Image (tube, rainbow, N blue to C red; front, side):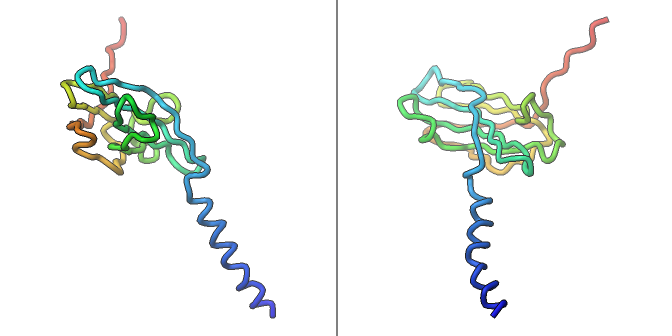
Length: 141
């Protein structure tokens, strides 16, 4: 009898576990927005926070100016690999995005980042990547 009651709770336990893995507890914040001067495209740099047990994820998405951010396609996703990569204030990895030619987006990101997604093209744009670190200024004497 006790075993049967315990077994009847399994679906509820499974559903609550899945709910913890969904995006419901995550929040995205726009870090920067970059309009392509040679086209109707825009690139968004986003920081995604899913709570204390995960690293912040840094995303780059490309969309059209006439569309809202939710319609943009995520082309790059990375995190700091538990602190191995250089991070900005707020937990996102160091990353810079710039349109270097019409429909050509260049993305420089922290060298030791753990990269999950890296598309070479999207929405008619070509995307170029470079693992790097921010330049450090020499100390002032």
